[in-house]
Structure formats: C-alpha cells, structure tokens
Length: 57
Image (cartoon, rainbow, N blue to C red; front, side, top):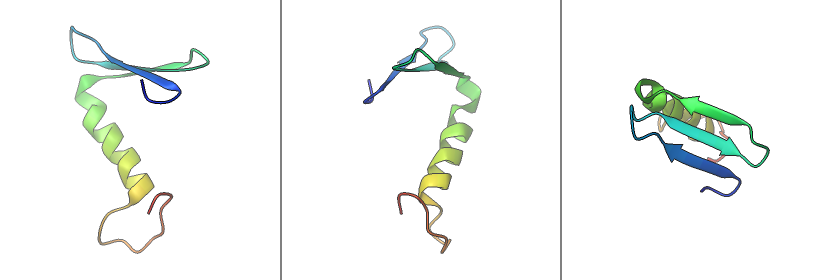
C-alpha cells in the first residue's frame, strides 16, 4: 500500500495491478514495467545531464 494506492503483483506471470481509492485500476504487463516506470521517473526527475527543471528536481 502506497498512500492512496494499493499495489499488488500477480503470482502467475508477474504482472502488477495498481488500484486507487476510487476503485480505478491499472494492470502493468511484466514486460513493460521497466519502461513505464523509467518514463515516469525521467519525467519527474529528468536525467543527470539535462538542465530542464523537473517536478521533483
């Protein structure tokens, strides 16, 4: 549980499900988890060599 999100990993297949307090959910395919979170991380923090201000940088 991460604040208002419930994050679970399926035993079979290793996919993830993320559910918010409203019951909305997102299923992340195991093969795409790295690229999805890498994209989110880069959007929030940027890369080390970039000078663009990011949300959490």
